Length: 125
Image (tube, rainbow, N blue to C red):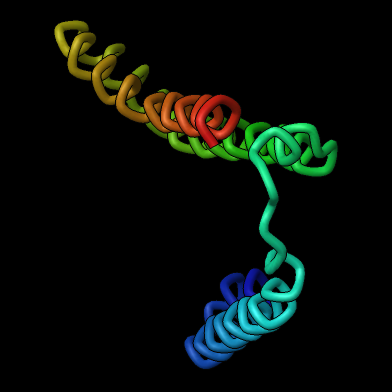
C-alpha cells in the first residue's frame, strides 16, 4: 500500500499509508509486549542450563545471522549509488580516486557493524 501511494505521488495517499503503517507497527509492539511477559517471566536456575537450551542456542544463531545479513543488505544498498557516482567522478577527474574510495569505505562500514553485533551476540550474550 505504501509503495502504491508513493508511486501515485498523491500527498493524501502517502500520508494515509504512513499513518496506517505506524499504527500497525505500534499495535504489533503492544501485542508482542503483552504476550512476551508470560513467555520470558521464568528465570533460569543457572547459566549452564540456559546455554544448554537448544531453543536459546538456535535463536542466538538466527539473531547473529540476521544482524550480519541485514547489515550486508544495507551496505549493498548504500554502496550501489555511491559506487556509480565514484566511478563517474573518477572517469572525469582521476585525482578524486582517494576521496571517492573514502566514501565507499564509509558505506561498507555498515556491514562491519553488523559483524561486530553478531560477534557480541555469539560470544557475550
